[in-house]
Image (tube, rainbow, N blue to C red):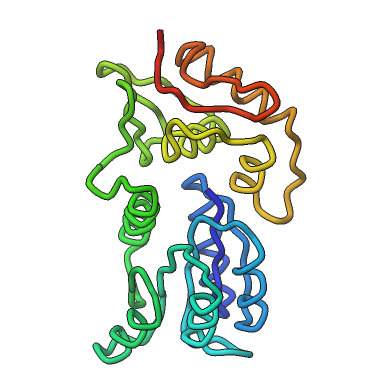
Length: 222
């Protein structure tokens, strides 16, 4: 899953970027509201974390422009401003959630997971669970019939994306856009290797190849 972090506090942005990357997210970071308006609208992000007190253009104006242009990407406002009036203002502008600084890193992690599931119509699922497989996002492994199956970091990122998009045909280019940040070279052959590794661990039919189209998470291990 690819996230955009818009935060002008450099030490905090560095800390958040490293933490989110450890959780298996690809993260792009911006510090200026004007840059955020363009990049948030032009790149395929799965979720945006937006500070309000930004240079160039205030966060609420950035959000308002995104929503006016039709951008539906979930937005989590992250700010030191904690008054009810400002929370309401942010939600009216189109924010999906609101977290005030200081915050506990685990709370941010759980809110991100919740927003991503809600965006895929899985709001009532406390965990990602499909066809006998349960993805443990905290331990970055998958469980079948109570038995843990260990995953590499790349396999975890790929399987999480598949499980958030069950039965959908996903092209290699689409997967690359959502699994890597803007600075990482995208190699479809590497994706194919990771898909094959997942099949060996989970069963050949879990991920189906659609010739000329891409892959589909079928959810069957038979």
